[in-house]
Length: 111
Image (cartoon, rainbow, N blue to C red; front, side):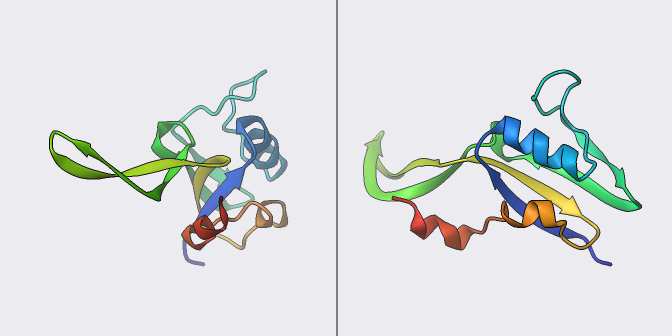
């Protein structure tokens, strides 16, 4: 089985911890819902590695607006709703993660 990178979006870090725990990934600090990284291991013989996007779980996407910084145009961005993590997973996608799968193509659906 090859390694797949699953791009996941949750409503917040607490939901991410709950869903990951449901499939056997225990990356949240004991007693609270805060991810501790780096986090890798095995669940049922399937190797995984978890990565938090941009150290905050916040993904930004471009708007159609630009601004100027030191005379140079820059594209403005805004946060994409949700809490984002990447999961390298060496097995079939667990059912509990399917509703959280996310792709860059989904960015066009945000207001």
